[in-house]
Length: 296
Image (tube, rainbow, N blue to C red; front, side):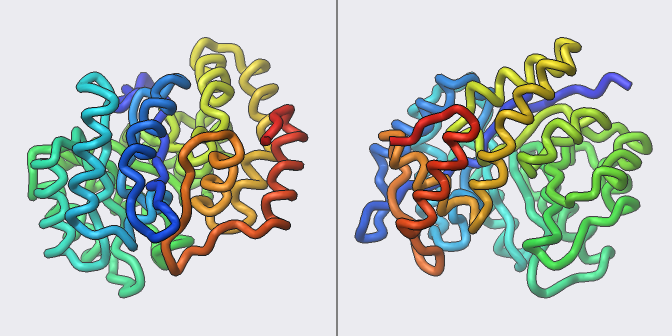
């Protein structure tokens, strides 16, 4: 089965750097986006979980898309998060993202209110019907409280604008069956499962850790898709301490800490997230050291 990768192989869900007073560091947004592209990214996801989308306004979300587009140019795919647990507001966000210049939408399962699968399907259909942009479904039951069940994924993939799945379900067996049943392009949304998901047919990643190990992630991906499974496994195993360490707490927190230590614009978090503690930073440095990477 030859499955296309509609947004390339390597994309990252980009953080949003804030200054100490909680305002967006716009120069930092530009600098970080440019840095990520320089490490081999094919695209960026903006206004996602790692971008602290729950605490940015709709106006800020629009401006992030515009600023990043200006920084990276027209050849880089920009996928905009546009979804919450209210379908009508999600549709409005989708329309605004399209107007701001996004190439595609990342739509998360409605969270907290736990709709039945009929409601999940209706939500994704409404989002796909809202604009002409392609839609990536985002399945992350650990955050949303519900999964997109396999039958729902297969049925929704029949929609002409639902073109891919970001998989953070943590169930490689279920994802394997979904790929076999319908051939949907799957992007791994859990860095420690990137290589396992490639082995069952995933086409790429929407990463968090590629903020800090983008070049190494590119090496792993290129090795795998060139048929060099041994080399891909070597890189995967080298990066395991980074994959584990970055998610000792909420991923944006320690990603920002690592970026700051690398001299890149990680910035601060917005409440209810809190910045990394000194102890967490020490542990993170050790994680990276074990992967052969020194954080200053």
